[in-house]
Image (cartoon, rainbow, N blue to C red; front, side, top):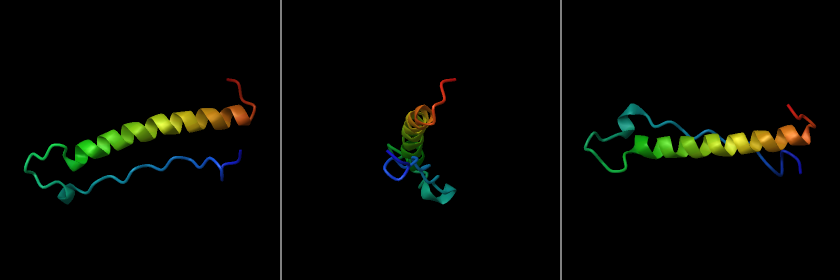
Amino acid sequence: MTETDDPRPTLPEHPLPGDCCQSGCNPCVFDLYDEALAHYRTELAAWEARHDLKAGRTD
Protein backbone atom coordinates (compact mmCIF):
# COMPACT_ATOMS: atom_id res chain seq x y z
CA MET A 1 0.00 0.00 0.00
CA THR A 2 1.33 3.44 -0.92
CA GLU A 3 0.42 6.90 0.35
CA THR A 4 -1.67 7.20 -2.79
CA ASP A 5 -3.70 4.20 -1.61
CA ASP A 6 -3.77 5.48 1.98
CA PRO A 7 -3.74 9.30 1.89
CA ARG A 8 -2.97 11.31 5.00
CA PRO A 9 -6.17 12.54 6.68
CA THR A 10 -6.95 16.20 6.06
CA LEU A 11 -7.48 18.75 8.79
CA PRO A 12 -11.09 19.95 8.94
CA GLU A 13 -11.67 23.56 8.01
CA HIS A 14 -12.05 25.81 11.05
CA PRO A 15 -15.30 27.80 10.98
CA LEU A 16 -15.00 31.54 10.73
CA PRO A 17 -16.27 33.62 13.66
CA GLY A 18 -19.17 34.79 11.48
CA ASP A 19 -20.22 31.18 10.78
CA CYS A 20 -21.81 31.02 14.23
CA CYS A 21 -25.20 32.73 14.37
CA GLN A 22 -24.98 33.29 18.17
CA SER A 23 -28.50 31.90 18.68
CA GLY A 24 -27.53 28.86 20.72
CA CYS A 25 -27.92 26.26 17.97
CA ASN A 26 -27.43 22.69 19.08
CA PRO A 27 -25.11 21.63 17.66
CA CYS A 28 -23.23 24.82 16.90
CA VAL A 29 -20.85 24.90 13.94
CA PHE A 30 -18.03 25.05 16.49
CA ASP A 31 -19.32 21.89 18.21
CA LEU A 32 -19.34 20.13 14.83
CA TYR A 33 -15.82 21.37 14.19
CA ASP A 34 -14.64 20.06 17.57
CA GLU A 35 -16.10 16.62 16.74
CA ALA A 36 -14.48 16.66 13.29
CA LEU A 37 -11.15 17.68 14.83
CA ALA A 38 -11.27 14.84 17.36
CA HIS A 39 -12.04 12.39 14.54
CA TYR A 40 -9.17 13.84 12.47
CA ARG A 41 -6.71 13.41 15.34
CA THR A 42 -7.75 9.77 15.82
CA GLU A 43 -7.47 9.06 12.09
CA LEU A 44 -4.12 10.88 11.86
CA ALA A 45 -2.65 8.87 14.75
CA ALA A 46 -3.75 5.63 13.07
CA TRP A 47 -2.36 6.78 9.71
CA GLU A 48 0.98 7.76 11.27
CA ALA A 49 1.19 4.39 13.03
CA ARG A 50 0.54 2.54 9.77
CA HIS A 51 3.17 4.53 7.92
CA ASP A 52 5.78 4.24 10.68
CA LEU A 53 5.37 0.45 10.57
CA LYS A 54 5.79 0.46 6.81
CA ALA A 55 8.99 2.47 7.12
CA GLY A 56 10.37 -0.17 9.47
CA ARG A 57 10.38 2.05 12.54
CA THR A 58 9.75 0.30 15.84
CA ASP A 59 10.40 3.07 18.38
